[in-house]
Amino acid sequence: MANTSSQIVKILIRYFSLLSVTTTMKNATIVSITASAFTAIALTGCTLTLDAEKLETEISQGLTDQTGLVATDITCPEDQAIEAGNVFACEATLEGGQTLPIQVTQNDDEGNVNWNADEGLNNLRGLISAEALETQIAQGIVEQLGIETTIDCGGPYRVLLTGESFECTATANDGNGESATVQVTAEDDEGNVAWSLN
Image (cartoon, rainbow, N blue to C red; front, top):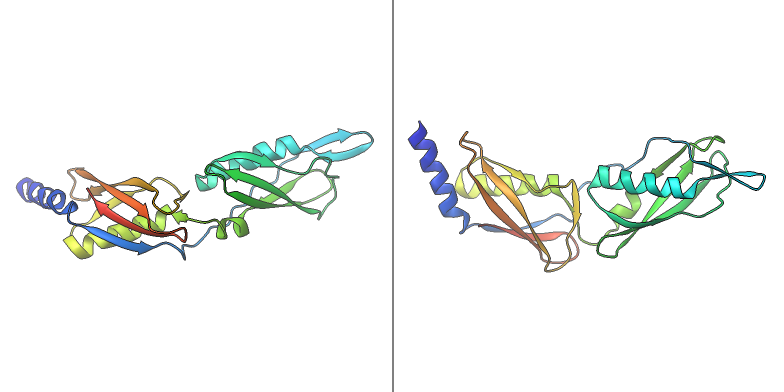
């Protein structure tokens, strides 16, 4: 059995350089990105306001934790009075310079808020879902080589613009743990990518 597994891995590695696929990630599903409620209160004069700095920090950390995207800057309006049901916008600047609008809703008059970046994520140029890409690469390898693999592209999301590339890892599911690199390159800013096994 070990010889058969070894042969499969050698075949897998030999054909990796021959395999190249273009796939569309444009219609990848965006999961809801919402922070849990937290209190962010500051006292300005005689009015209770949300602590914009704390809110910006929470959004930045939550965005990275939930999406894998890194914000270089978050800007929320200062002196936002605490008022249940109040909705306002913050803006995240992501690595690479794109901006992401974030909707913030005050849950109560105690400073508890939820934030949501769904609409902004749906409009980001070059947004790629790692899960969708991993599935498509694994299916492509099975279809073209007949070999089951586990693909790891990091994630859960990344922005990949025309001509930019990154690497995923393909690991054979035969128990030997042999792996190869998958080169992913953006063909446009709409989420269409080409990938090849190296």
